[in-house]
Length: 387
Image (cartoon, rainbow, N blue to C red; front, side, top):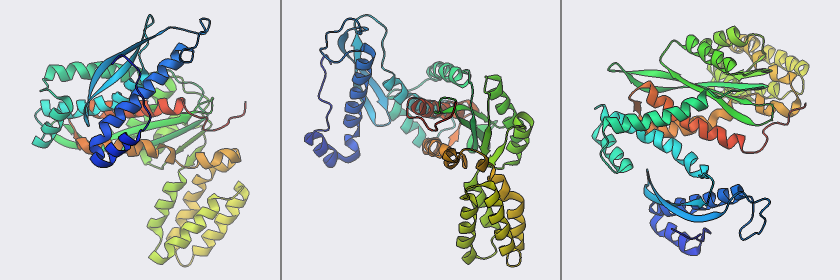
């Protein structure tokens, strides 16, 4: 393809989508991706189309080069913008394909190692278009792992707010299917933007895994942490106290409310208990929150004594955020900011179901985390931080 094409959503394309449904998605993806790559080239050149400005111009547009990419929707041929002299390559295409490749490799490894079903083999053949050999899978995996390893070990810096979360994935190990812990750390940097700081996958004991993970963040230069927000997993709690013991801790209010429901003796009380907790969390100051909490504890002391004791002991762990600026509290009180990434991980790992090894799981999670982090870092400021 040697010319720029119209990338607007034309009535013909809308009609195509209405008639063919999901079968029309490859054409839409091709048009949108081509438009994104052309916009990236234009930004790189530094001048508008047909503009004569040699002082700001970095290079000259030089047509397009076709590139066929195999995706889960089938092969799609993109028009990759070219320039005359410098080594420009659109990152929009690379970012969009990174997690796709990781998913393909996870499925391919299952197939090559002989642990797949006929369904997985069929999916792999459709994704890759050719029969894969173990050497091909190993070579592709090594290339992607090098990129992801560099990203996981990149230097960090001042990170006032740190968020920690974990999930589990099924991994095959020595002929057995086991639960591997997937640890994720995100943070608000001193620029006010969010970033995924790191991910880790391991079958090791929970506290040791968390401790090693947190130590790696510190070793990579993470400094200036003023608040850690997380759930109250025992392994995480012990590791956090060992590595970041001097940093205040905010227990995730969303998980606190979920935990409280286990102590409510009757179903009809749950709505009122939830409302009472929300009132405590919404207090404008720690003094007022403590006062409200005292009243709530007294309210349930007779009708739900176990709930009252649990609230008195644990709810204060969710009030640490009240010592921080009011305009920051809404985004510091839970780990819900990581939920979108966790949802994407769940969506992708459902396809694999059981990873052939830890490396395959780490590869896919890292690719998704890297894409998410790049989106966050190139987007709007998440919190306005004072100097």
